[in-house]
Image (cartoon, rainbow, N blue to C red):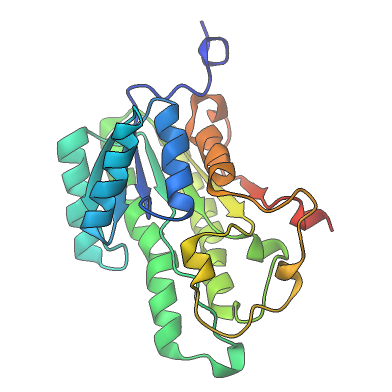
Length: 257
């Protein structure tokens, strides 16, 4: 029986590592993966928050673990990824979701803010992908990597996103290059572009008023975290086994108006 015939979204016995999985969009991603049977490992800079998020998944009937990782710190990434492999085995999937999204106008831009955002939003996914892909290749079982970028790359911009959009655009280049290098190992690499999601992080984002086309109402309505999670579930699942180097926007129709 093929994956399509037997339930192409079944992740039973699969381990999926989700960075930033303890809050915001990450909670929706983690919930959808857990409901599909995955052992979801929540990675977060805040160890207590990661533990609480994993406990919530378990309380809901899922399987979950947790690990403290600061994706902006190489030593933390190397140590944390090794801990995940030791505790749960080599992940089948990696979801690079952790990110920061404060706003700063271009004319007020600082190198310090550029470096801070790039370290989390761009360098972090590179480091995580490197470490987990090494383990996937060594295991020889294939795998899935999904980057969470932003619909800011296709038009849902607001003022103050010069640094943020640049950091997320880097993920498209990372995905393209790593998809090529990893395809021979049966590891796929894809990217999801979320539209507006009213997460605590988005609401609390610092900076100037977010004016611009990103403020218009999407024709299908605002997304929630589980909408993003549904796209990630598809890309991590057996149903997407022939899909790599692709980009899916989950933006409520922002991109068509």
